Amino acid sequence: MLQELVVEGLGVIERAELVLEGGSTALTGETGAGKTLLVAAVGLLMGGPGDTSMIREGVEGARVEGSFTLPPGHPAMEILVERGFIDEEETEGPTEVVLSRTLSLSGSGRVRVNGRMASIPVLAEITSDLIEMAGQHEHGRIGTPASQRKLLDAFAGEDARRTASEVKQAVRAANAAHKTVETLTATEADRDREIARLEEEIAEIERAGLQPGETERLTAEAQRLENAESIAEGLNEATDALTADDGAVDLVKKAEAAVRGIVEGDESLAAQLTRLESAGHELTDVALELSNRLVTPDSETLADVRDRLGAIGRLRRKYGDDETQILAHLERSKEQFSELTEATSTVEEAEQEREAQSEAAREGSTKLSDLRKKAAAKMESEITKLFKELALEGTKFSVALTPVEVGEGGAETVDFQIAAPGESAKPIGKVASGGELSRIALALHLVTSSAEAQTLIFDEVDSGVGGEAARAVGQSLAQLARSSGAQVLVVTHLPQVAAFATSHFRIVKETTGNRTRAKVAVVEGEERVEELSRMLSGLPESERAREHAQELLDLAASSSF
Image 1 (cartoon, rainbow, N blue to C red):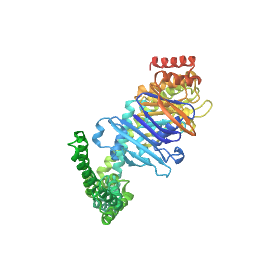
Image 2 (cartoon, rainbow, N blue to C red; image 1 turned 135 degrees about the vertical axis):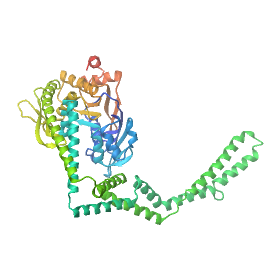
Image 3 (cartoon, one colour; image 1 turned 90 degrees about the vertical axis):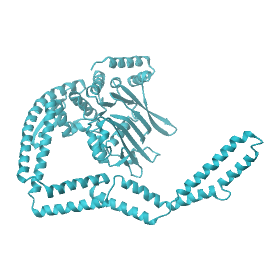
Image 4 (cartoon, helix red, strand yellow; image 1 turned 180 degrees about the vertical axis):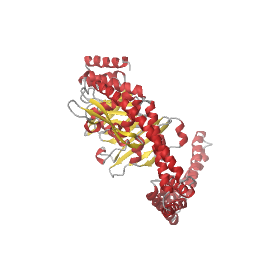
């Protein structure tokens, strides 16, 4: 779950900090106030495109940071452990993960995961299991065949989910056995060449004696050595000022002696004498510490550090982005080397394993296909019914199952399609607008109640709706948060939707002089009534509007899900 979101220097947002909770949260504000920028900020955390045009005028860069809490067993844990961003023992309880991304006018943006540098693809891989976004500019995962397949299996029930997992594992095992057969039946010359290549890789990496984090440490050491001369000059100058004749230490001692000579005549000076004594000791200690910190320029050591960085850089270009990935490559090479030189399984055994796993995959796929066909018809009916409540009257939902060769996803592709009144069915990602896509995602999550991502963001979910349909959208979002346990964030301009949220943020745009900035604040109690009044009539002080706003809040509070 997204616990905290910090945005700095993005468009009209100077700085915004949102502390979020579970349940459903509404983000409201006037058009152009910055609601879309908050969605764009989350998009950057998801590895989306970012450029200098997004940076606030007058600042050097923009920063987005998100703090997440992951429960044990969350799918993202495997990636985080594998990449070395968290230790495996940390996964036993709730785990905090901090993701950050910066944009710079110089183009040198940075990505960090728990303080460690990472790449945008890695960021996208991690957040794919943390956040799902549906809106005008995001098709979200509901537009991908893999996600549609998972949603259909979730709707079909536990038997389908278990069978899908078994098929996936059987196909992977069959492919692994097939690879073993190919390896074992390769020509002797091919095997020798592969063994020689692996030996070379293993020897090259092992000779380097890499340590995780070594590049970062050596870079800091190189910087220190490069500046050794200027550091030494500064330290010498400071030490001389303290310890030279008539330096600070001597002057303080003279002052101390002068006061000591008169303290018997005025005992009230005893406190000042004590302070002068302490000051003399402190200055002497500082001078000693500064002299101990003297750095001697060492061109040979600097050259060694640079050579070491160059050697690691060559390994990074060949085997991985950092030391952790290079060492992981080493382990994989050792495993392959062992398979080629010490394999005990025979070709016949591997072929038998391949056939057994292939047969298990075929049988499982046949069962899974039957479960999916039954579930697809029921899902079509329930989703189409929900469409009526979500202002998609006349729109039909269908599930197209296309037979394919048995693979990890089974024996068919799954394609969610919609058909507007009088139109033929087409894939949802190609025909749905932002608001429609958000409502389609909402309907899908409502019927499956098994949100894979812990945070669901709906942008423009209420586009083109009003009245009773708007109330249904708001109630459905609150119901989704309760039934799935996911955190639901919705950017909305409709009071009927905002009223059903368990928490509420308002984005306000302010202009001071010639500078415009957006501010984000929690609205509670009377402030929430006022904000809903503004959304209802544009007159937050209107008594009638306030009564209507309170009525909406009372209705939301009394609704049963």
